[in-house]
Length: 115
Image (cartoon, rainbow, N blue to C red):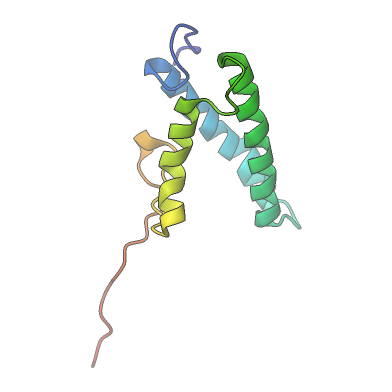
């Protein structure tokens, strides 16, 4: 894997591979460790991660934007792709698109046995 290419956007070509690597490392090294900690409340962890996201998104907009953005359109698009299923109640969340869904809930299932 190559280091991010400054001539490409953060989710273009090899930079997308790097973005997935960073996300995977964050989940493995930060999120899982935090959730495994005694007394960790997942809701508190989710809000902490969201606060971190907001700070990172605004920092990115300050770096790549022209001063009017608070979140860059390409980042908003990536986030929206991951949140739409959650908001729709389908829980088809894909954290790393190339790895497929981590959890997919399919309505229905096996019918109850009458016997």
